[in-house]
Length: 533
Image (cartoon, rainbow, N blue to C red; front, side, top):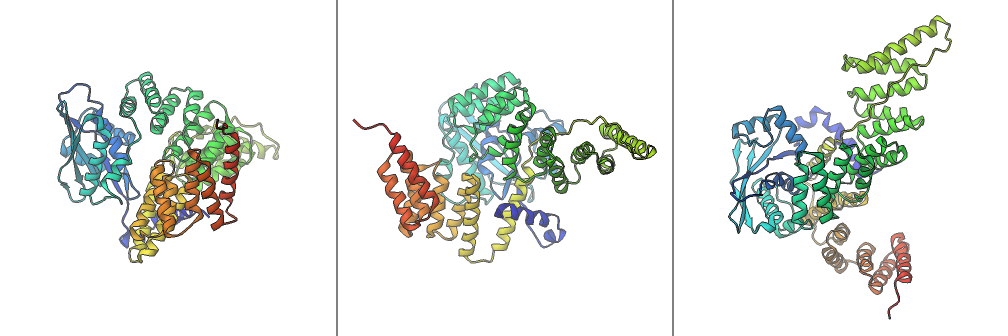
């Protein structure tokens, strides 16, 4: 059984247990980053205000810190009657953060004197009711992303949440996005019209084709505009290894569903189910199965209800599925569940009246078949909610840390190594990197950790990946480290180095299937390479 999924089930039980909290279980902390005040007189810099929640949120997020996203923040502003462009007073901000259960709130401002861009920020500690000391970062405007990353590092330091590694490593990890693409991305997500949103996000993707956050938002813009073919096209471009892959798969499933491509929709949701066993995905797979005439519809919907019995839509959909299979009594029970929670659900009332009438007619006619009721359409879930899953994932980390607090360094390192490898196998390279760097803090000379870290860095930083692989091999030869070097060499068409490292891997592990497959790939690529003159 997958370690992470089994751990989620364990922690889900812990979350339902009051004794868990009575024993001092510490939950994950929640962080709210607000748009920064623009104190500069330079024109054209207003968009940077919204860029701070976006980039600081990305950089300050961790297994122990959940960052409130923009949609959640805007909803909170709306509930408080605060215009999106207005920066609330400290008193209002405190009340709003209290209602959102935020543990920390980041506020700040920025200015530009024509040469130097300077950003300053403070973290409001909601538990201690105090503002942490102000921190700042500055540099040329062209280095805005680095400035914001450096500011995130300083804030994490004040909050005593610094990640492993150096400040330079932390800032370097934010590179890879062009500033003009980042500007178009931010202008796109805050655009007032769908046309402008699409135009800005298309430009961000043109400038930076590998900018997957921009690709995701462009797909969402097309989905909102009901341009389902375009939405499917853009969601499909996001690799399964990218952090945005989960949300992209959910939205791809929706776009394909609405364009009537149920097979593609089921494929997208089924992939996501292997990573996020959340009830909305079971529900949507059940709805799709119903449209395709598959009897697995009820099985999926029963799993959704088992995971979240309080959601009336799941009971409603199951009632429709049962009614379709002529299981009238069971369908009626599900509709009563819906109406107990939502007495004003007109669709549920109407279907219940039809089914109850059919059951009475059957009895009066001696169980003769009644005319089939007119069944409503099932309800698909449109909202992607990974928040609960992320919070459970954070609880997993917290439970593990509490359990390991008194363990020796080797045991602690082994946990983070296993967690990192599990994330790697699921395609989450950046999250795996965090776990593996944590493992190195406890056991810096463990060759297996360096080898796994090399794997996690292959796509994002080939030079660092090669360095980690070499470090691992200097400590102890392993097929895993040799294969990293072989794949890196093959990517550069360095066939001799690729073959040499693959052969070394097979000497360590003669039956290693990955090495055998790579050996075949090298030979194939060599045969396809143009002959040297």
